[in-house]
Image (cartoon, rainbow, N blue to C red; front, side, top):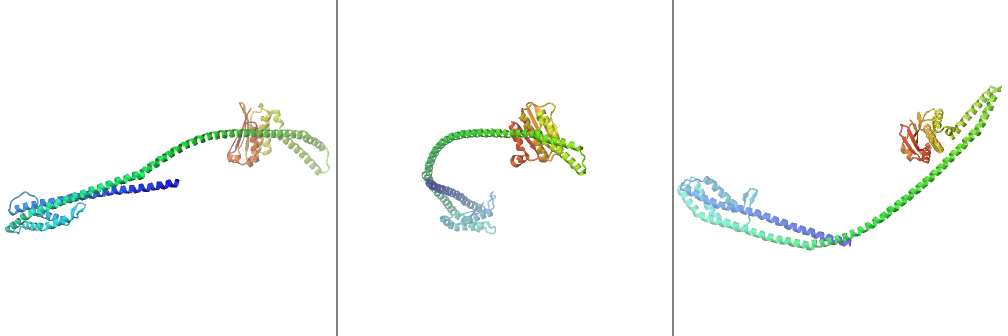
Length: 475
């Protein structure tokens, strides 16, 4: 069907192009003929004018010849010689079929006119010769009178022959005009026939095809609208299904997130309980034994050793026991500082800053109110303390900072914990994309603890511009 439609369309296109070409050819031909005929008519009018002027010149020359021979005065401003030359040149142009005009020469092709000019030649030559005799001053009066007689005898013949030539020009011009009219009628009739054929063979099939195509397009549009309606309904159902799936996925994600939080909370709570138990065992068990060992060692200081080396080794042993006791106390404090439960978060953070400054040699400052304890739940105190502890350890190990500051403040019903350093900083994109970086620097642990406290965390860092970590938790 498609191939048949293409074949019909190609055939109609060829017919249409051929018809247009024929109409264009007929139109151009008609215009060419009209233009040519008009040009010929202009030439004919020029020829008629020149021929008429020849008659006028011959009469004028004859009159001047009579006046000149009889020596009669006149008021004619033109000279006899110039009129005679003009009359001869115009006659020669007519005979040679080349009449000069502004843009070329006017010519014609007519055997009757050639014959008439051939018959006129002796008469013209005789009159011209006699007029030349009259024009010469050297000619005698008798010669001029004889020449005048010859001119007067030949002038009627010249005028009669020129009349015949003018009528022949007019006749041939009229015949060409009638011929042009017949050709125009033929061209118009052919154009009408071509247009009728074009209407029957091209436009009528095109109109029928257009009607069929419009009908098919209308039917297709109706079918398309129906399909669009069905598609719209299906799309609405699909959107509703997608919304339902999205809701289920969100519920699943929230449930999974809640499970992860519960699992992480339980894990952290277990870690804290284990730390508390281990801290108590260090303090009550190993700490007490080390203290007893130190007391026995101090009692042995009174004993005099005979060997000086033994004395130095004993002193080194006492110093080592003291260092072990101090390290055990520090480990027990890190696991579960007693000052946190006794005096609150602010005091614990202040003591943490002092210990970090003593151990690292970095200037660690604390800014907060330690005189009045901020009332908060035990898990919140532990969580915020662990966040500060983890962030402080990160700054000490990785920031290469000269100064670290921990700030704790209460703003209405919100606790704000800020840890800032002037170290080398890092790119936030690395923090978001590199899991190893998160694990190594403990930032994931900080995020998890903040989420368990239903808090908000903000990390601001630039390379060579330090890092600032802000945690906000509602009471």
